[in-house]
Image 1 (tube, rainbow, N blue to C red):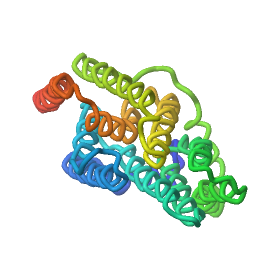
Image 2 (cartoon, rainbow, N blue to C red):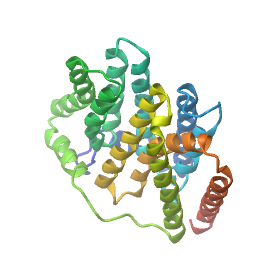
Image 3 (spheres, rainbow, N blue to C red):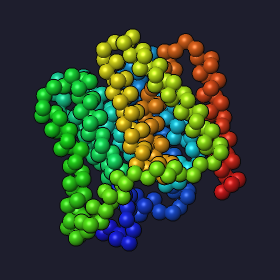
Image 4 (spheres, rainbow, N blue to C red):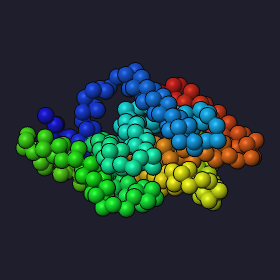
Length: 296
């Protein structure tokens, strides 16, 4: 039964705390497994959808780098679980392009997003993103748009039923209030954390505009997937606004950013400067993570 003594901002947050506990070793192992599995999945998506020119490990590399970018990510981290579910969602959305029957992958995608919302309620705001995806893929039948909404809200309906059964409706409603209360206070960052985030922001923003400007050089199938990914980055940035006080929410941009960086890195000719820039970031990240053990 949910704990009424503490107000969680998502239904499954308490469940996560219960299973993970306070063991730093257990948390570190779980986080590592989630990062590696997420990296392998995004690499499969990148290669399977020909987002890179040739088969590579760029997706895995960028996802791992972004997931380790901040020392604050080392603690119990629900956003790694959210990312894993969103990766599965994105994979299903890409499948719509390859089938004449869009309802099955669309329902799976929206259901996965709804499940992710149980860990982070603002994910519910991804419904317009799913609709934009359908528009991008030129799906015009009204039933697909309705199915997307049903699939997204279904996990929340079951969660509400559970809370209602135990007469904890107020707790459920309060979690919504807390999740959608915008807090403009930015979480604390060390100096090195801040430098790394600024450097990452520089390359991600540059890659975003490089990809946006080169979209019409791609074939139609790849162009549609890249447009979907660009929109995903925009929506992820909007979702971060609700958790500015929790720096871990920045992890939400790691999926679209990894895909953008993978595509740009595999198609640009000036790899020397990109390699030097990324190498600098990687060195700073490992230095920052190494120093964390001495400051613990």
